[in-house]
Each structure stands twice: as structure tokens, then as C-alpha cells.
Length: 445
Image 1 (cartoon, rainbow, N blue to C red):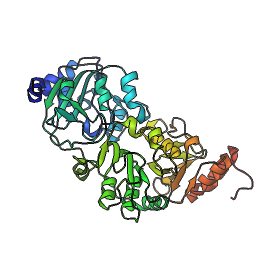
Image 2 (cartoon, rainbow, N blue to C red; image 1 turned 60 degrees about the vertical axis):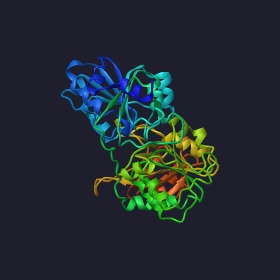
Image 3 (cartoon, rainbow, N blue to C red; image 1 turned 30 degrees about the vertical axis):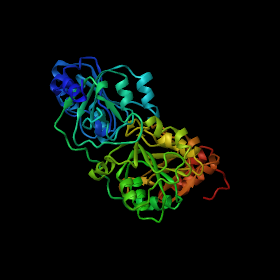
Image 4 (spheres, rainbow, N blue to C red; image 1 turned 30 degrees about the horizontal axis):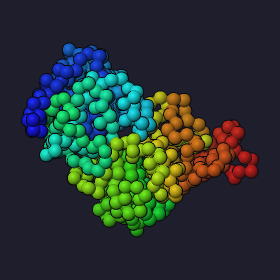
């Protein structure tokens, strides 16, 4: 049987694919821009027939149809590996939950730990002449998801870019059970807000620490975006990329001729990433681009892999930092905001790297004038998750300066962190540090 004949034999409607989901099932929707689209809508149309169906996804870019049905929580549960604004809305609806993990472990979770998946569905690029469906910019852990599923369904989307380079970037027609041809929705767009003055100041402080030939990892958000813009306009050269998420900033840096990967110890001349999302310019850039290396997250995010790359620069956001140097990048009290993701992986990897640096950046305060609150706090509040333990803290940066935590004892950490806190909060933080027995009388007040 030819690949085309096999394709036709497995081609079914979205409605028929949806019928394979039964009450009590675990159903996996893939990841980010690869989430199920048309089969999701068909499952939602069957909502009255189903109960206790548990869905998995992550970095959700649009509201799943199954979460839009009336009384969704009575029938469906959404389980996310990493929360976006959409996921937070689902949690607030009372039918969504966060699944804690270090992102580098996710393929192994699927193969060894999570409950067997009844039905796994994701969007893919059209089948190529060799019979393969490319996963697009979410190789991440998709093959591991299919490895642990009883029924494997792919939704073909003609707009999905083909992402080349690493292992497990595609699945063969012989390995899937069913194929659905959908309406070919456009790729979900992820823009970024223009950097504010605080973002720009933090970016300045970090960029001056980056040497020529460094390898970059950028998180998502205003500050990493500002840093990317500043790198693009800098005199830096011979930069490399080895990142979890590929974002628009990398496209801009590459367009200015700053990226060639020539100094990378591994994967020379290639930009490695586990998944990507951005504007259309990103999808156009990564499509069929041999310079880019789509790879599984247990490769890109493994600290042992990252540590092989000299001068590795990891740049990520945070919500709060306490005076011990504990970093929360994912929650505020009991409210889950995002997830651990790969931050701890890259913090550790940068530690292992010769010349490596991990930067955690945040504004010194937030809120309106008169109601402002410090992001540098005495201790993390009850319920707040420590994404990075104090033993892994490296560089911490606000608009008031940057400090390196390596080698510091508790009173030195407190002094350093208070020095980059918003001036309005420094006196109170000193009093808090005194009460916590981490302030020396001889310290400057």
C-alpha cells in the first residue's frame, strides 16, 4: 500500500474522531500552537453524552471548545502543564488544574508516570512525500504523548510550518491510527508588548554582561523581549541559540546578523529549541529552515546538555524574590500564574556552563502609585511556590541594579537584594532582615 493509499484509508471526519472519546477517558491535546482544533470542537458537540473526561494540554493559546460548553466543569477537567492567561481563566472557572513538573522531564513523565491516554490528538503539517507528518514548532514531547496513547489522531493543518533538525520531529503515517483534515486555521499569534522604561533599564544591565560568542536562552515576557531587541541593536556577534521556547526576539536578532552559532560547543551553526510561538514572521522564519533545530525538551532543557555549552546566558522573568534568594516565577500565594516550565532547568544548566550566567529579571515593584508593592519580599508568602531554590540563585536584576548571589551568605544576600529593591521599601526590608536574623549591625543602613 502506498503512503497516499494508507493516508486515505485512515482519513475520517472530526465527528467520527470525537466518537472515540468515552466518559472517564484521559485525552491529550498536544502543546501550544499544536493543540487540537477541529476534533476539540466535535468533542464539545458531544458534551451531553460525556462525563469525567480529563484533558491535558499546556501553554494554551486559545480557549478549548470543551471548556466553552455549558457547565463544563460537570463533564470535563482541564489539566495544564504550563498556564497562560487562557489556562488561568479555566482554573478560575473551577474546572482546570496545574500539573507541576520540570519541563525537561515531560517526555519521561508520559512514558513512565502519567495515566495511559485513551486518545491523543494534535495538529500537524501535511504529510510529506516520505509519509511523515511534521509536528511543527512543538516537537517538545509530542512523540512521547503518542507512545503512551491507545488511539493516535493527527489533525492536518496546511498552515503548520515544517520544523527540521532534531529527533522525534515527525510521525509516520504507519504510526497513526486516524487522520482528520480540518479547516486549516491560521497559526495562533503571540505578540509581545512594547518594553517600558523599567524593561529597558533591566535589559541594559543584562546586555552589558553578555560576551561575544555567547549562547542565548530567552524566556517570554516584556523584559526578555526588551533584552532581545537590545541585543539585536548591539555590537554583539557570533551568538548562538539553545532555548526552550523560540520567540520573535530571536528572529529579530538573526535578521541583524548577530546569530551564527559558530562558537557553540554542540549543535554548531544551529539554533536549537523545543517549541515556539509568536507572530507570523516567526512561523515564516522557522518553516523549512535548516539553520533551526527542532528538538525534544528532554534534550534542549536537560541541564547536562546546557552545561556543555560555554558562555550560556539564561534570561528569565520572576514574580517575587525573597531575601534568602528564593525565586518565585510561577505563583502569587495560592494563585498559580504560569508554571515551573524550564526555568530551573536553565538556571542549573547555566551554572554548569563554563562562563555561564543565569539572569532572573523583575521590576522592583508593581501596582499603582500609592498602592505599590515590592517584588523583593522578606519571605515568600504562604502558598507561593519557590521555582528556583536559593542554592541556584545566580544573577538577580531590577531597574536599580544587578547582584550575583553565588558564594554569598545570608546577610550578604539580604544586603545585596535590598540594594536593588525599590527605594521606598528598603528601610522596611532592613527591619525585616533584622527580625529574621540575616542583617549585620555593621551593614550600611
